[in-house]
Length: 295
Image 1 (spheres, one colour):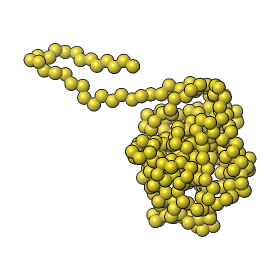
Image 2 (spheres, one colour):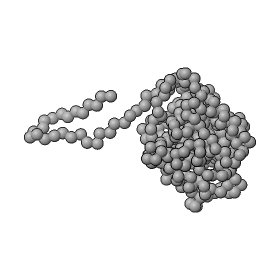
Image 3 (cartoon, one colour):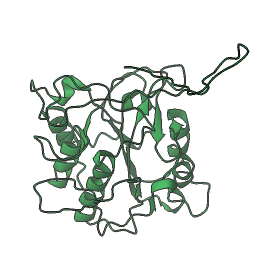
Image 4 (cartoon, helix red, strand yellow):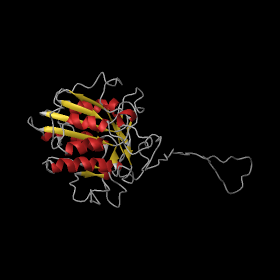
């Protein structure tokens, strides 16, 4: 890296030229089709135009729609700023733009931490969570960047590109624990997502106590990976773990079957490696029904 600071002019009397507020951003170089040893995913707020995150959210949306859910029962928050040519989840399915005809409730700049917390708050009249009843089943799917450095104690944060802010795991837990419904499936698709669903940075031993939940994370306390677009050997844009996971749910497989399948998925990288060896996904089944719950 070469940094060049230039000034054109003359300075008299021993005065100095000071360059203030110099901001250097580290950009990530990724071989999109065959990353041998891929670097960490881009950190939050680099404004990289990527179909990966909105494509993964749209996959979940369309799977739910195919299995009888309706726009009235789905609340879709989708940040897709910069995707001027639409969003293509799968290169081989004949659908050029999966965003077309999708029922998006909140998009782009409005997909921020404040709005997300509002919709999960049962005490706010009109929020999505406030409309749930005891017989409902709730699926929460979160996809974007995550970090384990913001809080200083190793616990994770989930980030929002629209406002460059985040929700902490404790904030999320304090909202979800107040939701009263039959059962909840929580999917967190970000780096360090295992930490986001655990207390005190203690992966695998101290999950948050949400007794009516099945918790699934894309990773443990490590980076998780996604395809930025569908120009790769797998032909899809989205999460290396949750894309095959939701493909299996779409085929009416159980959550446990989908989880095991996605863990053993080998993304099109060289040398071939299974997802479980790369990012170590995690699942906690408080309900004991992961082997029977299907869409």
